[in-house]
View (cartoon, helix red, strand yellow):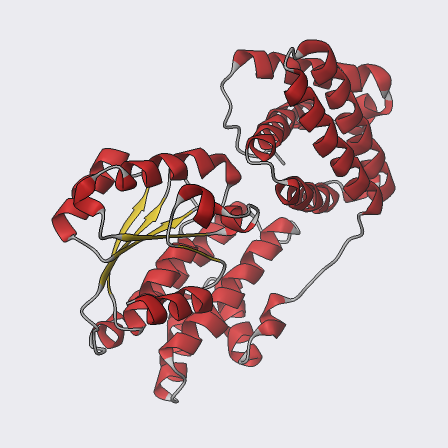
Length: 353
Protein backbone atom coordinates (compact mmCIF):
# COMPACT_ATOMS: atom_id res chain seq x y z
CA UNK A 1 0.00 0.00 0.00
CA UNK A 2 1.54 3.28 -1.07
CA UNK A 3 1.13 6.47 0.86
CA UNK A 4 1.04 10.05 -0.31
CA UNK A 5 4.43 11.35 -1.47
CA UNK A 6 4.90 15.02 -0.58
CA UNK A 7 8.58 15.64 -1.28
CA UNK A 8 9.80 16.67 -4.71
CA UNK A 9 13.41 17.25 -3.71
CA UNK A 10 15.58 15.31 -6.17
CA UNK A 11 18.38 14.76 -3.67
CA UNK A 12 16.01 13.04 -1.24
CA UNK A 13 14.43 11.00 -4.01
CA UNK A 14 17.89 9.86 -5.06
CA UNK A 15 18.59 8.92 -1.46
CA UNK A 16 15.35 6.90 -1.34
CA UNK A 17 16.35 5.11 -4.55
CA UNK A 18 19.69 4.21 -3.00
CA UNK A 19 18.01 2.81 0.13
CA UNK A 20 15.63 0.82 -2.07
CA UNK A 21 18.44 -0.72 -4.13
CA UNK A 22 20.57 -1.55 -1.09
CA UNK A 23 17.70 -3.32 0.63
CA UNK A 24 17.13 -5.55 -2.40
CA UNK A 25 20.87 -6.19 -2.66
CA UNK A 26 21.09 -7.33 0.96
CA UNK A 27 17.84 -9.27 1.17
CA UNK A 28 17.35 -11.55 -1.80
CA UNK A 29 14.08 -12.87 -0.38
CA UNK A 30 12.33 -9.57 -1.11
CA UNK A 31 12.68 -10.21 -4.84
CA UNK A 32 10.63 -13.33 -4.39
CA UNK A 33 8.17 -11.90 -1.88
CA UNK A 34 7.30 -8.72 -3.83
CA UNK A 35 5.80 -8.51 -7.30
CA UNK A 36 6.61 -5.57 -9.60
CA UNK A 37 3.69 -3.48 -8.36
CA UNK A 38 4.66 -4.00 -4.73
CA UNK A 39 8.23 -3.00 -5.53
CA UNK A 40 7.07 0.28 -7.03
CA UNK A 41 4.88 0.95 -4.03
CA UNK A 42 7.74 0.11 -1.69
CA UNK A 43 9.91 2.77 -3.32
CA UNK A 44 7.14 5.35 -2.99
CA UNK A 45 6.75 4.47 0.68
CA UNK A 46 10.48 4.98 1.25
CA UNK A 47 10.05 8.51 -0.12
CA UNK A 48 7.26 8.99 2.38
CA UNK A 49 9.30 7.62 5.30
CA UNK A 50 12.03 10.14 4.54
CA UNK A 51 9.46 12.95 4.38
CA UNK A 52 8.14 11.94 7.77
CA UNK A 53 11.65 11.75 9.23
CA UNK A 54 12.41 15.28 8.02
CA UNK A 55 9.23 16.72 9.56
CA UNK A 56 9.89 14.94 12.88
CA UNK A 57 13.41 16.38 12.92
CA UNK A 58 12.26 19.90 12.06
CA UNK A 59 9.70 19.94 14.86
CA UNK A 60 11.80 17.90 17.30
CA UNK A 61 9.04 15.34 17.83
CA UNK A 62 9.91 11.83 18.96
CA UNK A 63 6.18 11.19 19.43
CA UNK A 64 5.59 11.92 15.75
CA UNK A 65 8.12 9.31 14.70
CA UNK A 66 6.99 6.80 17.30
CA UNK A 67 3.30 7.09 16.39
CA UNK A 68 4.06 6.91 12.70
CA UNK A 69 6.18 3.75 12.95
CA UNK A 70 3.56 1.94 15.03
CA UNK A 71 0.85 2.96 12.58
CA UNK A 72 3.02 1.89 9.64
CA UNK A 73 3.77 -1.52 11.15
CA UNK A 74 0.08 -2.29 11.51
CA UNK A 75 -0.64 -1.05 8.00
CA UNK A 76 2.08 -3.28 6.53
CA UNK A 77 0.94 -6.31 8.51
CA UNK A 78 -2.66 -6.05 7.31
CA UNK A 79 -1.45 -5.74 3.71
CA UNK A 80 1.20 -8.46 3.84
CA UNK A 81 -0.23 -11.00 6.29
CA UNK A 82 1.24 -13.87 4.31
CA UNK A 83 4.74 -12.76 5.31
CA UNK A 84 3.98 -12.82 9.03
CA UNK A 85 4.72 -10.14 11.59
CA UNK A 86 8.29 -11.24 12.37
CA UNK A 87 9.30 -11.14 8.70
CA UNK A 88 7.80 -7.66 8.33
CA UNK A 89 9.70 -6.56 11.42
CA UNK A 90 12.96 -7.87 9.94
CA UNK A 91 12.34 -6.01 6.68
CA UNK A 92 11.56 -2.74 8.43
CA UNK A 93 14.52 -2.95 10.81
CA UNK A 94 16.76 -3.49 7.79
CA UNK A 95 15.08 -0.57 6.01
CA UNK A 96 15.73 1.90 8.82
CA UNK A 97 19.24 0.58 9.36
CA UNK A 98 20.07 1.16 5.69
CA UNK A 99 18.38 4.56 5.77
CA UNK A 100 20.67 5.58 8.63
CA UNK A 101 23.75 4.36 6.78
CA UNK A 102 22.82 6.25 3.61
CA UNK A 103 22.10 9.46 5.49
CA UNK A 104 25.53 9.25 7.15
CA UNK A 105 27.18 8.76 3.75
CA UNK A 106 25.24 11.29 1.67
CA UNK A 107 24.19 14.11 4.01
CA UNK A 108 26.73 16.79 4.94
CA UNK A 109 24.83 18.37 7.85
CA UNK A 110 26.13 16.68 11.00
CA UNK A 111 23.29 18.05 13.12
CA UNK A 112 20.76 16.50 10.73
CA UNK A 113 22.67 13.22 10.82
CA UNK A 114 22.66 13.16 14.63
CA UNK A 115 18.95 13.91 14.87
CA UNK A 116 18.20 11.37 12.13
CA UNK A 117 20.05 8.62 13.96
CA UNK A 118 18.25 9.41 17.19
CA UNK A 119 14.86 9.04 15.50
CA UNK A 120 15.93 6.04 13.41
CA UNK A 121 17.08 4.22 16.53
CA UNK A 122 13.76 5.08 18.13
CA UNK A 123 11.97 3.66 15.08
CA UNK A 124 13.92 0.41 15.32
CA UNK A 125 13.10 0.12 19.03
CA UNK A 126 9.40 0.61 18.26
CA UNK A 127 9.52 -2.06 15.56
CA UNK A 128 11.19 -4.57 17.85
CA UNK A 129 8.57 -3.97 20.57
CA UNK A 130 5.58 -3.75 18.22
CA UNK A 131 2.59 -5.92 18.99
CA UNK A 132 -0.65 -5.90 17.05
CA UNK A 133 -3.45 -4.23 18.99
CA UNK A 134 -7.02 -4.20 17.74
CA UNK A 135 -9.78 -2.04 19.14
CA UNK A 136 -13.50 -1.74 18.43
CA UNK A 137 -14.17 2.01 18.44
CA UNK A 138 -17.93 1.44 18.42
CA UNK A 139 -17.71 0.01 21.92
CA UNK A 140 -16.47 3.39 23.18
CA UNK A 141 -19.84 5.00 22.45
CA UNK A 142 -22.42 5.57 25.18
CA UNK A 143 -24.90 4.39 22.52
CA UNK A 144 -22.98 1.36 21.18
CA UNK A 145 -26.00 -0.35 19.59
CA UNK A 146 -26.96 2.82 17.73
CA UNK A 147 -23.38 3.42 16.60
CA UNK A 148 -23.13 -0.19 15.43
CA UNK A 149 -26.41 0.03 13.52
CA UNK A 150 -25.32 3.18 11.73
CA UNK A 151 -21.90 1.67 11.01
CA UNK A 152 -23.50 -1.47 9.54
CA UNK A 153 -25.76 0.66 7.36
CA UNK A 154 -22.68 2.36 5.91
CA UNK A 155 -21.11 -1.02 5.14
CA UNK A 156 -24.41 -2.14 3.64
CA UNK A 157 -24.44 0.88 1.33
CA UNK A 158 -28.04 1.79 2.04
CA UNK A 159 -28.40 5.55 2.46
CA UNK A 160 -32.08 5.32 3.30
CA UNK A 161 -31.36 3.03 6.22
CA UNK A 162 -28.53 5.30 7.41
CA UNK A 163 -30.75 8.37 7.29
CA UNK A 164 -33.63 6.53 8.95
CA UNK A 165 -31.50 5.35 11.86
CA UNK A 166 -30.44 8.88 12.70
CA UNK A 167 -33.90 10.37 12.17
CA UNK A 168 -35.42 7.80 14.51
CA UNK A 169 -32.67 8.40 17.11
CA UNK A 170 -33.30 12.16 17.11
CA UNK A 171 -37.07 11.64 17.37
CA UNK A 172 -36.52 9.33 20.34
CA UNK A 173 -34.88 12.19 22.23
CA UNK A 174 -31.16 11.54 21.77
CA UNK A 175 -29.33 14.86 21.73
CA UNK A 176 -27.87 16.01 18.42
CA UNK A 177 -24.56 16.54 20.21
CA UNK A 178 -24.59 12.86 21.16
CA UNK A 179 -25.53 11.85 17.61
CA UNK A 180 -22.32 13.51 16.47
CA UNK A 181 -19.96 12.47 19.26
CA UNK A 182 -21.40 9.04 20.06
CA UNK A 183 -22.58 7.86 16.62
CA UNK A 184 -20.95 9.70 13.72
CA UNK A 185 -17.47 9.93 15.29
CA UNK A 186 -17.12 6.30 16.47
CA UNK A 187 -18.75 4.97 13.29
CA UNK A 188 -16.41 6.91 11.01
CA UNK A 189 -13.41 6.07 13.19
CA UNK A 190 -14.28 2.39 12.85
CA UNK A 191 -14.72 2.85 9.08
CA UNK A 192 -11.17 4.21 8.99
CA UNK A 193 -10.08 1.28 11.12
CA UNK A 194 -11.66 -1.14 8.65
CA UNK A 195 -9.69 0.48 5.82
CA UNK A 196 -6.53 0.26 7.91
CA UNK A 197 -7.15 -3.46 8.46
CA UNK A 198 -7.89 -3.90 4.74
CA UNK A 199 -11.43 -5.06 5.42
CA UNK A 200 -12.79 -2.41 3.04
CA UNK A 201 -11.33 -0.41 0.16
CA UNK A 202 -10.82 3.31 -0.17
CA UNK A 203 -13.96 3.48 -2.32
CA UNK A 204 -16.05 2.16 0.56
CA UNK A 205 -14.42 4.57 2.98
CA UNK A 206 -15.21 7.49 0.68
CA UNK A 207 -18.79 6.27 0.28
CA UNK A 208 -19.23 6.08 4.06
CA UNK A 209 -17.86 9.61 4.43
CA UNK A 210 -20.19 10.99 1.76
CA UNK A 211 -23.26 9.30 3.26
CA UNK A 212 -22.40 10.48 6.77
CA UNK A 213 -22.05 14.05 5.51
CA UNK A 214 -25.44 13.73 3.80
CA UNK A 215 -27.04 12.45 7.00
CA UNK A 216 -25.38 15.27 8.95
CA UNK A 217 -27.01 17.72 6.55
CA UNK A 218 -30.48 16.40 7.36
CA UNK A 219 -29.92 17.64 10.91
CA UNK A 220 -29.11 21.19 9.84
CA UNK A 221 -32.66 22.58 10.12
CA UNK A 222 -32.64 21.65 13.82
CA UNK A 223 -29.05 22.79 14.36
CA UNK A 224 -29.48 26.15 12.65
CA UNK A 225 -32.63 26.92 14.69
CA UNK A 226 -30.77 26.58 17.99
CA UNK A 227 -30.13 29.67 20.10
CA UNK A 228 -27.05 31.63 18.98
CA UNK A 229 -24.49 33.40 21.15
CA UNK A 230 -23.55 36.10 18.64
CA UNK A 231 -20.09 34.65 17.99
CA UNK A 232 -18.73 33.55 14.61
CA UNK A 233 -15.92 31.19 13.66
CA UNK A 234 -14.25 30.14 10.43
CA UNK A 235 -13.03 26.55 10.04
CA UNK A 236 -10.28 25.53 7.63
CA UNK A 237 -8.35 22.39 6.65
CA UNK A 238 -4.85 23.74 6.10
CA UNK A 239 -2.73 23.14 3.00
CA UNK A 240 -3.93 20.32 0.77
CA UNK A 241 -5.13 18.30 3.74
CA UNK A 242 -7.86 15.93 2.59
CA UNK A 243 -8.91 14.66 6.01
CA UNK A 244 -11.70 17.18 6.53
CA UNK A 245 -14.41 15.14 8.25
CA UNK A 246 -13.16 16.10 11.71
CA UNK A 247 -13.35 19.85 11.16
CA UNK A 248 -16.78 19.49 9.51
CA UNK A 249 -18.06 17.66 12.60
CA UNK A 250 -16.45 20.24 14.86
CA UNK A 251 -18.06 23.16 13.03
CA UNK A 252 -21.48 21.52 13.34
CA UNK A 253 -20.93 20.90 17.05
CA UNK A 254 -19.93 24.53 17.53
CA UNK A 255 -23.24 25.46 15.84
CA UNK A 256 -25.01 23.29 18.42
CA UNK A 257 -23.22 25.32 21.08
CA UNK A 258 -24.47 28.61 19.70
CA UNK A 259 -21.80 29.67 17.24
CA UNK A 260 -22.32 30.76 13.66
CA UNK A 261 -19.78 28.79 11.63
CA UNK A 262 -18.29 29.23 8.20
CA UNK A 263 -16.46 26.18 6.90
CA UNK A 264 -14.10 27.05 4.03
CA UNK A 265 -12.96 23.49 3.30
CA UNK A 266 -9.52 22.34 2.21
CA UNK A 267 -6.84 23.64 -0.18
CA UNK A 268 -7.82 27.29 0.31
CA UNK A 269 -4.96 29.67 -0.61
CA UNK A 270 -3.67 31.87 2.20
CA UNK A 271 -4.75 35.04 0.36
CA UNK A 272 -8.30 33.71 0.07
CA UNK A 273 -8.40 32.85 3.77
CA UNK A 274 -7.36 36.41 4.63
CA UNK A 275 -10.10 37.76 2.33
CA UNK A 276 -12.64 35.62 4.17
CA UNK A 277 -11.43 36.86 7.54
CA UNK A 278 -11.81 40.42 6.32
CA UNK A 279 -15.27 39.75 4.90
CA UNK A 280 -16.79 37.77 7.77
CA UNK A 281 -14.82 39.25 10.70
CA UNK A 282 -14.98 36.09 12.87
CA UNK A 283 -14.19 35.92 16.56
CA UNK A 284 -12.31 32.65 16.15
CA UNK A 285 -10.53 30.75 13.37
CA UNK A 286 -10.13 26.97 13.64
CA UNK A 287 -7.27 25.33 11.76
CA UNK A 288 -7.21 21.56 11.34
CA UNK A 289 -4.43 19.26 10.14
CA UNK A 290 -4.20 15.49 10.28
CA UNK A 291 -0.98 14.84 8.33
CA UNK A 292 2.27 16.28 9.77
CA UNK A 293 3.40 17.19 6.25
CA UNK A 294 1.05 20.17 6.45
CA UNK A 295 2.48 21.66 9.63
CA UNK A 296 4.51 24.16 7.59
CA UNK A 297 1.36 25.20 5.72
CA UNK A 298 -0.41 25.71 9.03
CA UNK A 299 2.45 27.85 10.35
CA UNK A 300 2.42 29.92 7.16
CA UNK A 301 -1.28 30.63 7.60
CA UNK A 302 -0.90 31.43 11.30
CA UNK A 303 1.92 33.87 10.51
CA UNK A 304 -0.15 35.55 7.81
CA UNK A 305 -3.08 36.07 10.17
CA UNK A 306 -0.92 37.29 13.05
CA UNK A 307 1.05 39.72 10.90
CA UNK A 308 -2.08 41.49 9.62
CA UNK A 309 -3.29 44.18 12.05
CA UNK A 310 -6.85 43.81 10.77
CA UNK A 311 -7.05 40.45 12.53
CA UNK A 312 -5.50 41.26 15.91
CA UNK A 313 -8.84 40.62 17.61
CA UNK A 314 -9.31 37.14 16.08
CA UNK A 315 -8.35 34.23 18.30
CA UNK A 316 -6.66 31.23 16.69
CA UNK A 317 -7.29 27.57 17.61
CA UNK A 318 -5.57 24.59 16.02
CA UNK A 319 -6.26 20.89 16.30
CA UNK A 320 -6.03 17.53 14.58
CA UNK A 321 -3.87 14.45 14.80
CA UNK A 322 -0.72 16.26 13.66
CA UNK A 323 -1.09 18.80 16.47
CA UNK A 324 -1.35 16.00 19.03
CA UNK A 325 2.09 14.78 17.90
CA UNK A 326 3.74 18.10 18.70
CA UNK A 327 4.23 19.99 21.92
CA UNK A 328 3.99 23.60 22.96
CA UNK A 329 2.60 25.09 19.75
CA UNK A 330 0.51 27.55 21.72
CA UNK A 331 3.65 29.07 23.17
CA UNK A 332 6.00 28.74 20.18
CA UNK A 333 3.47 29.95 17.60
CA UNK A 334 1.74 32.43 19.86
CA UNK A 335 -1.74 31.03 19.18
CA UNK A 336 -4.60 31.00 21.66
CA UNK A 337 -5.29 27.30 22.06
CA UNK A 338 -4.32 23.86 20.76
CA UNK A 339 -7.22 21.52 21.38
CA UNK A 340 -7.06 17.73 21.32
CA UNK A 341 -10.83 17.25 21.43
CA UNK A 342 -14.16 18.92 20.89
CA UNK A 343 -14.77 18.94 24.64
CA UNK A 344 -11.47 20.71 25.24
CA UNK A 345 -12.28 23.38 22.66
CA UNK A 346 -15.79 23.95 24.06
CA UNK A 347 -14.38 24.30 27.57
CA UNK A 348 -11.85 26.86 26.34
CA UNK A 349 -14.43 28.91 24.41
CA UNK A 350 -16.76 29.01 27.39
CA UNK A 351 -13.97 30.54 29.47
CA UNK A 352 -12.68 32.96 26.83
CA UNK A 353 -15.80 34.28 25.06
